Image 1 (cartoon, rainbow, N blue to C red):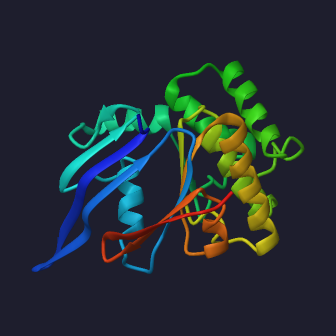
Image 2: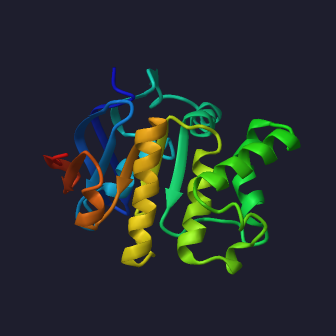
Length: 229
């Protein structure tokens, strides 16, 4: 059974008097433990699709199941629970709080879960160790390189043991060597922990770290490219 299943998903919205069709009848299935990429030119619907996958937006029509749960008609509180319990997010601009150190940033999702301070700290330190930042846990974002900030963001994404990581241009602000390091961390999380990873990227070499690439064009899946082992 797929962990993510979209059936006939469409998303449209109005810009003044103009109807914009961001997604058109998208069908997509991702098995648990897969690593897939989504590519497409600007305006192809990549961000809209990722927002729907992340329960940050709702489709205009169609059905969406994640881990066997129909989510397209859920209320805001239920969607927040799905995001907190099942999903981890990694963004191009890191989205770290500047006044908090690395450890405190990673702890945030666990605070929303109501975990006690001792357990939060233990799990957050373990997450930071897993991305090689055990010596930087008390540094604030301004004291970290771009690659280190992205590793903090990955630690924050995995600290709650999500089933799925959604990554939006995770290497877009990084140089090629650092990008490779981030992708190696993703591969390890995918292979060693079995976390399903869905990333949006415009970089072909980054997309090829996944098992499969979904190419979007004008709100539709134009083609699916399988990446050889």
